[in-house]
Image 1 (cartoon, rainbow, N blue to C red):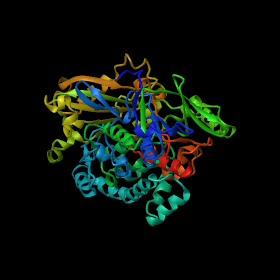
Image 2 (cartoon, one colour):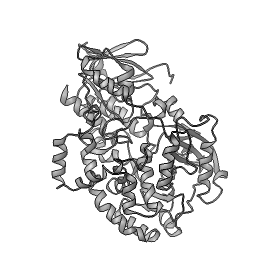
Image 3 (cartoon, one colour):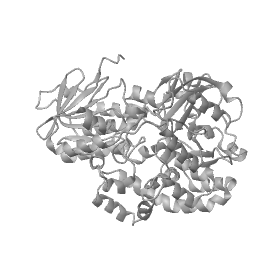
Image 4 (cartoon, rainbow, N blue to C red):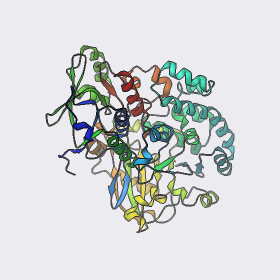
Length: 538
């Protein structure tokens, strides 16, 4: 498909008699939240247009072809999306979405050494594995789960509706207050402090931080980051799964659902302006000068772009909003990902043989966390600002083709596999720049020291998605997508209400996406909540 030629999928309904507006709603941005929002609006009978700048939908939740295989733009582990009603309400299974459960849910290891240990969805299995690897940490893990699991259940429940004090109060009462005290206490503390309260070994303290604050791009010592310590419990409450065919099957199914509900999708189409008239929106102008009108515009893109680049002729009531976002700094990217073709599935040396034999091939399918110590993670955050990377960065590694041959090179007929390796705290402003950097190769060489056999000898074609490429290829300014963090309590007292209410002072202008509650990852709750807000408001 040519990048200059818009792709249009249109329902026959859109060819009916002309009306006051071209559409009832325009959604700008075809990431998974934009798709979710558009699909719900179309299902409710709203004439909906979704506009995406790239030639395909999904953004960083998508998959693409590489070296004869199908690779995911970001990690393919989905937990939170499966805790929402989205799959059932939009009938995504009818549009080809099918999940494979991942067990164990995660394997944890530390650069400082010691045995690796698995987390299973089942608490008892996890405790048994800890008893074989870190018996002195078992009591701490039980105490941790006593507090963390009720809090996670409350977070998942709260995320499935636009946040409000009344709504959260009802959910708290329905759960008889379980989880509230943990949310209150942990949300004031740092994630590092919480992990030190329950655990002593690096292999217990640090992997939760890698999948929490490190993924968020903040230091684990940051006050108020405490909910980032919930990540172990997430895997006991939710089930880790991967879409058959790659992560991109989620946006593909959502796009198919949108069109089936009568919605319209235009790819390779860029928005130049969000137009206002009087106290509300009038529609959008495309980069070719075409104006499309609608009563509602939902931006699923970066709020900085929405308010500072695109919003045109904004009414006076938006002045304070624009001024706030003009002062709000835009963070830089901090995450990179390697996709590699490998001839053999690697085996982690630190995984005890008894556990490795029990797990079999599933050990490679699960994501393995290689964690620096808490002190090193904090130091690594400081290095970001200097354009440097930790000697031993936080890594997330898996071989998704171990369970899904459909995404392997030549559909698995050659016996080759895909290795996915994510490295965290890799700065957008790397000293010396990314194009000539030896950093990505160094991560592969480091990983090779952790696995049996000749990993580097089995390595075939590979590529590195670094922050500069995320900016260039996925329209992420400085390689970073603004993300809401903090949980349901922060959502209620948030100083940027447009991120939690999905509404703006401009009538008819709404927000969705990672910047809005409940935040990043393949979750979809933001898109659903934004659609519900539109339907109740306009």
